[in-house]
Amino acid sequence: MSIIEQPISPYREVKDQTETSSGERATMATWIDERTGLVSANRAFLSWPVPKYVERNLLYSLGGLTLVSLIYQFFSGICLLFYYDPSAEAAYNSVDYITYQAPLGWLVRSIHHYNASAIVILVFLHLLRTFFFSAYKAPREVTWLSGVVLFLITLGFGFTGYLLPWDQKGYWATRVGTEMAGQVPLLGSALAQLMRGGATLGQLTLNRFFVTHVALLPGALVLLLALHLYQHRYHGVAPTISKRGQIRARHSVPYFPNWVIMDVLLGLGLLALLIYLSWHERAPLAFPANPADTDYSPKPEWYFLFLFHLLHYVPGRLEPFLIVVVPLLVIGSMFLLPFLDTGEERRPWRKPVTTAVALFYVAVIIIFTFLGS
Amino acid sequence: MDEQKFPLNNVSEPKPPEMGRRRFLETGVWATTSVVGLTLFGTGGRFIVGDALKDKDEQWINLGEIASLSAGQMHQTAYSLRHKDAWRTVEEKGLLYVFSDDGTTYTVFSAVCTHLGCNVHWEEARDGFSCPCHDASFSRTGEVLGGPPRQALTQLEAKIEDGVLLVLV
Image (tube, rainbow over the protein chains, first blue to last red):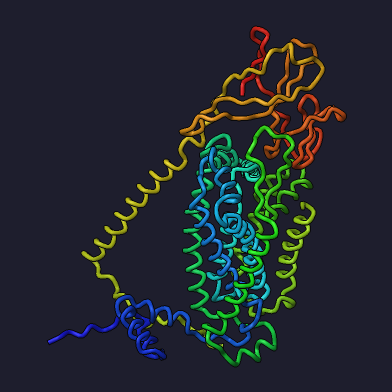
């Protein structure tokens, strides 16, 4: 007498509906699936109908392209770890070695450098698209909130990443950045010292930034990305705001491959662009960090430039307000957005206040970034 | 539009908890987990903070004979000192500005701008310091003349011993 084990995976029923063209492949897939449940789970996750208006629509591929871009960043980052030495004495030389001596090191490091900017741009555009299409509204609040935190994590990657070469740019940008944290009332000094690992920038600062860049932030990113994607899959695509989209919404296409193909092609285009930029101009490496240099004029990466430049226009006594209150207001309003804007209306031109506030934020960031550059 | 839900329908609903033994065990699991979690976070947190909040160790450095520092002129002086940086002993570099009106008393400023830590320049024509980061300006005596800083340049303790200028950094 034998006992027949019943499948317990919630995805099992999907497996029975799928057709396979090759018997051998089906046998292999069945073998793996019976032991892991991963094949049917994967199929269940990918085989869902999405409205036709997302197909071949660049705006709906920003999220997918961001994901592809993050994969490039993980891959190039892991490659760099094979050579990078996180010590204050050797960090600069190891990055110099990567850039000028390691085989294809210039390419890997330059892709990592340019792709960091690409991710910031893509996440920002994805956030704007989600905002203007009101895709943050119920029941997608958690998707939006996880997206906002992912945006902040992206900026955290940028801030912790550019110290790692231990060159003039990274050293001075970090010195200024930690001093800015030091402007926070009451807690500022302790906060700055905790970031630096002591009173001055040194080995412990490099260790802290390194471990944050390669362990803490990637861990947080992976967890939140899983939540973000699961929420996206769970709730499906948000309703469209255009009439044309509403007509197209009557029809659906499968997520895989119809929607995914666009992400893959755009991802290929992005990779080509990154390789071209890397070939055209290698990722910069300034002179080694020198705290005694008076000729070097510190400037942060372009995506923090607006904040750095805004300080030109703010009297000293108002600086804590700019450094603490304004970011808290901006980030706080992003967090509160789905709980404040709870109406049915999704079209941005019918929500002038919300739209005007967002456009004001965007205009300030763009104008002061250009002025600062 | 139909909202496609992720199929988790055949996951069985948990039964309402029984009072008594089961409840006691559940509470035990959460309590134990909390103790372990707090212990790990407490230990890890203290370890990570390390000595980060300690003040910098100060030491006297030698800036050379005062005979070489002519009176009435601002001198830019780079220094380096042996300094313990965690497990390493390193040469810490820094920049100072030294000035004397009469050749007997010396004023020494740290070159670090009190705004965001950039190094200030001495500008002879303006008879003052300027910071390249946010256009801050300071007088010859270190007072803020313009820009965002709220504090004067840091004046360091200095003394002369056997004709040599020593500064506490």
